[in-house]
Image (cartoon, rainbow, N blue to C red; front, side):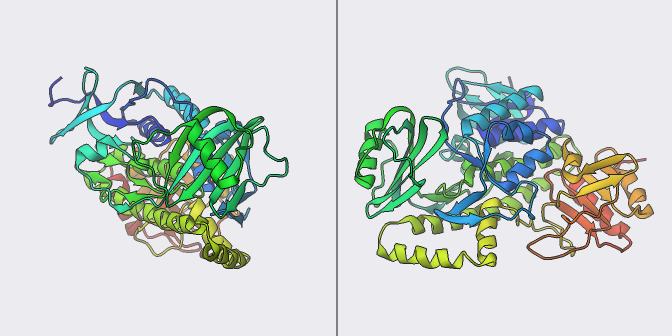
Amino acid sequence: MGDTGTDTDVVIAGAGPTGLMLACELRLAGAEVVVVERLAERSGESRAGGIHSRTLEVLDQRGVLERFLDEGELQPVGHFSGLYLDFDESESRHPYPLMILQSAIERILEEWAGELGVRIRRSAEVSGIRQDDGGVTVELGAGQEAVRGRYLVGCDGGRSTVRKLAGIDFPGTEATMTALIGDVELPDLPEDYVWVRRTPHGDYSAIAFEPGWHRVITSEFDRVDGRDEPVTFERLKESLIRVAGTDFGMRNPRWVSRFNDAARQAAQYRKGRVLLAGDAAHIHFPAGGQGLNMGVQDAVNLGWKLASVVRGRAPESLLDSYHAERHPVAERVLHNTRAQSALVRPGPQTDALREVFSALMVFDDVNRYLRHLLTALDIRYPIDGDHHLVGRRVPDADLKSDTGETYVYELLHGARPVLLDLGGSAEVAAVAEGWSDRVDLVVARSEDERWPVPVVGEIDAPAALLIRPDGHVAWAAAGGSTPDAGELRTALTTWFGPAARK
């Protein structure tokens, strides 16, 4: 295989949740994709344990949410560094976190990817990359034939080979603690045990994901393991004894690993034809379960843009908006997880800080602010426009039309942009004709109370709005107004390329 042709549109390194979600997004948008994964099969390790509101909405937008709900359990409470948060049912159809193990998430995503025709090459570890004007050649280890694509996306974790080979810096802060984690049996755990305990030596938690088995985590500060130091079941037992004074009869480990509070972020999410997503782009203390969710949302932001570029419908410059929109989101997550790491450090000073923090969380505005840090429901991308919805996720309002009833997120199942006309505007219909090959025009009515955005307090439904495939609003006209045709054309051209020639 020479470097002049391509095997596929996009090569994805890594078949974790981020890589699989990105592969599905690309296929829905008509791009060809190959996923290369160094493991011979799914690991089955539980790892991450939950999905937050915004990710649940994203899965609803694609029509696959029920697959995940069937395997998980909704929890009416969440936490910020172990301090309980209340959730507001008015903010989303899916306000509560879904407790579901990463192993199940990966299995469901891989099944969906198979239905969409995604090709996955296992036992295929990236060993080298070569960029040129036409694409990226991805060299694989163990004598395997290289694969070539027009673009390569590294979704290969915090120690990303793709990031290193691309020469992308990964600045941040070093670890100050070590946490050990394992799925084990705990026959002697008291029946009245509350999920997390703080002690003068650190903290520990035990969460039952299925009968007879617990996810155990111990955190010890000022003990930082070397990267290559082995992680064993005996080390987990010893750590639990140091922190809790007992191992609760721990036995039969399914899986043992570790993490820490190092926080790093790629200096750039794109370098030429190489892009990064998920843990390859950002790592942090996994407080509040934000990592997997952020990776899936990276994928949904990037997928439609990358597909538009490879299919020739949008200029390559559209890819620059991926870094512009997602890099600040990860910066915010790194910031809040550093704060959560500080809040779990043992000692009387932190105990006092937690008491003050807990008292503040009684106030609705404080609770809402912290809740939004975790759920990402308040994210607003830097998109030009004066309407309060522009840049934000679109509310999932109920809709009525001459053909029946639906809801906004159902319109996004095909991962296509939607021009939603709520006023029957002739101007909107006329402009829409130029993009009818790639943008769905929907004329409907709505009096749903979901149109208000809690973080801004607006109450009126818009007259019309342009919804990107990721569910964020690219343009909107105020309710009761006549939509500006020129502004709409500009938005359509910016995000979805020039109008089709007549």
